[in-house]
Amino acid sequence: MAAPRPDSCRLSLDDLGCLMRGASVLGTGGGGSFAVGRLRLQALGATRPLLVPLEALAALGPDALGVTVGMLGGGLTGAEVARMEAGQAEPLALRAARALERVLGRRLDFVYAAELGPQNTLEALALGAMLDLPVPDGDCAGRAVPELGQTTLELGRVAPAPFVLASFQGDLLVVAEAGPDRAEQLCRAMAVASGGLVCFVGYPLDGRRAQEVLIRGSLSHCLAMGREIGPGRWPGAALASLGGGRVAFRGRVAAFEVAGGDGFFRGHLGLDGTGPFAGSRYRVGIQNEFMWAWRDGVLDIRCPELICVVDSASGLGKVTYGNGFENAVAMGEDLTVLQLPAAEVWRSDAGRRRFPPPPLPPEEPG
Image (tube, rainbow, N blue to C red; front, side):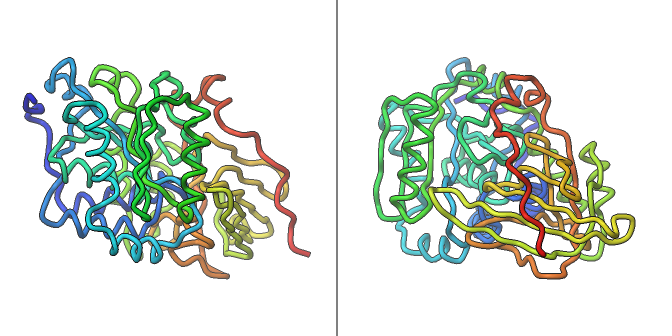
């Protein structure tokens, strides 16, 4: 394998922490568990992942082979995942990647991120570090998404198979052939059969195709966002400006509900407005991610536009992981909702059709 370009960099632990915090915002409530993301940071204490510009993949050679990795499913808390991981002899992602190398009959050359989020972005960086492989500065969604079909891989017609699914129960499922819709069904069924969560490694592609389908610079964008986040900074307007969007709402939590089932978790978050938003109510609909938002019963934002719900004081993104909000949503808590633009690829008719239309708004409490 040829060396990556000189402007590649080994990410420091401080960089990784910033990247995870930024991904908690850009992950739009999804992208895995914040608690498990922290475990990935701890595991990366001795080994730093190598982040490279997308164009640096050319230095790996025309036949460089990469795969993506992520955890699929829902309904488990970060604490439950941590307990299950503690019983594993080696990380699920590493087991799945080695199994896929056996299927492909060759070693991998790079690992790329499927989406943005506090866990799944770190999963790619962690697997890259474990295999000592570079991770390109890009992902396949520019946000987190609930389904495999909602990525640039599907728009670019990159085949998901062969892929490997690894479960905490010790299973390794190799799928040699499957179309996009069928891959989603198989992954979701495997997640349900495995207690709610499964590790996916797949979508093999070469470096040239990776440069075509990945959203350029998205991990660097996470880093920049993460550097704005911290206790007492009140960075909502700064994050909106950095992301090219707006503050859509600010208010206090009046209702929240998330429940798992069928490999997804669904629910809503309700805010009562404060300051310039006083007298208004805001409701955010959830299907793994924050997907739709209504102000006073009128649709305000819909996917694929990014709906980012952050702690008003620190800017840290809220994560809808497990049967409830993982990182401590509390009644009366002060939250800010940001609307950030989707990646350019999603603004086409073909891109927008990948995302479901909004349902009826959640009922207002009496």
